[in-house]
Image (cartoon, rainbow, N blue to C red; front, side, top):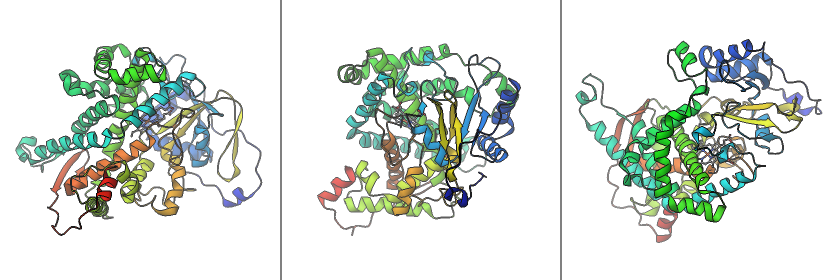
Length: 512
Ligand code: HEM
């Protein structure tokens, strides 16, 4: 549990800033102890919870992996921030510098990005950041019409293949007695990859067999080599510590795959590349490397983590709250209003017509933020304010490390913080809570811009997740998921013939 602050404290006058509690321990040994706790002896949640409890503070000093022995020049010392109030300092450009600090003090380096320092590693004070961010947002804007159509086509193809898998007799699933199931991870990644190439880059992978077949696997390996030094993967722990947590993983292993994708974007995404050069003044090589990074790391990486959480949560066979029927009814009501079972769920429907679906997506982002850690280096000495007037003195150059999963379960802000409450963000009170939803590296109530570091696709990510849920309930009356497999897909029964017929305006609203 997070320590809480007494209301009496918040009512009193602002106390002076105090030193940040916690210690980094003795050189090398302190960092090593924290690393082993982080990866081995404690879960990530536990790591931050225990230190917050021990220091009686939601702002405290700790080391963060990777560290020792071969991460030369990587300083693991950070100031951890695990409450919703102090966390907002990480979004303030006047306080923190975001240069080369995406995944923490360790930076995998431009060897993974064709030699370009891509946009996500740039600070807002670097002019190139504005160019690259504007380019990414413009590409998203240009794809407004095609995005929902391509998503639907991709999801349909994926579900066709999963239905076929599920229909196979149990014996083809390994010959044991287990009921049939269809693992969706590979199909979903394939779907996301193909869809993003077309919708974001304007390049259709089906023109290149290698890219179409292995593109998503190349991205998986490319991502893994960059982030594994900071992740627990579940090998035998001593092996994991020796092999993946002790030294930076080399980028050259992925160069052939990266080069294949680079050529693919250069040739088949030429229009997007020219747009970057012409409209945003970005050199061709940098445009391609940035496109690949946003496609592979931000978009493919983000969706690959988030969508399985969402599908598994909604499909939970043990869900006691009857969530699936309620979501299904909301989706079907949109279809009924449109009077067209085949209407594409567009951005309009995702934003305005499916409040429970949207609130469920928000709640999943609160409980399982796909990018749990956020970092920023103090530009100057400043006072970090937390709940109840608590204040801490941060020195210039110190690295703040915000841990979203605890900040977004802050009991000072969220009622029943540990519970998944699908309707949490409904109504006026629910909407007011959106200011504390930080998954996009900014409050949900704010917008990405060239001058900030909020996810360029903040709206599009939520909309896309809503559209995926809608597609599932367009097609199925019910479904169940165990782990990463569908175990039940109940096809939609034909709609009764006495549906009220829709007006053209309603059809347009669903599709807009
Ligand atoms: C579930 C999916 C996604 C998640 C969870 C996610 C999350 C994030 C987060 C946390 C950041 C800030 C990183 C930091 O500086 O600490 C970010 C930045 C960014 N994201 Fe997303 N993102 C997702 C999908 C996308 C998509 C689909 C796109 C575009 C197609 C995109 C484009 C970007 C860009 C360009 C930035 C850099 C912003 C900047 O440097 O100012 N993201 N994203």
